[in-house]
Image (cartoon, rainbow, N blue to C red; front, side):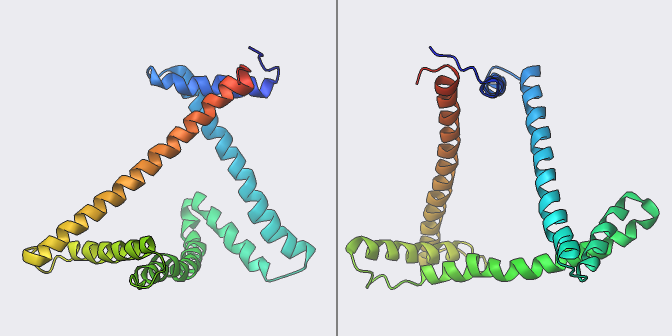
Length: 208
């Protein structure tokens, strides 16, 4: 055993053990570590957002580059804080409306491109001409999965006969997709656990 002499590693190890103590039961050590995590995260992101939004996107263009158009941006930003004044809180609706409209105008086209158009292009592969046998089979399964899942969510007709058969195939594809997502989530959490155990056994205790 070769214990670390770094005070930062000791603090991280103690907080890690405090979080692991929740496996026994809810206790003050776990709540302390939880509050520290929330407080440090809030402080960190507050500084990051203040630097990126106020300094880089307002102070530098307005004062260093002399772009007077950013005066309007500063006014809209300040109007958000009128929410703290009950009688003037209605003024905050203007920057919020501008923010929502601009965000929607930016996110809707990009969302359609990534979540609709790209996925439609991927599902329209020619599964008879993809090169190798495995890629042909994969393209065919993708085609069957997309069609059967769409049929499962088509509720204007009763799921009977061939329609009901393909709907049941869609349920199988949905369960496979949900299972894969759940398995990926579990594996990511296990990876985090392994990382913390390696930290405790290696950097802190010096066994590794």
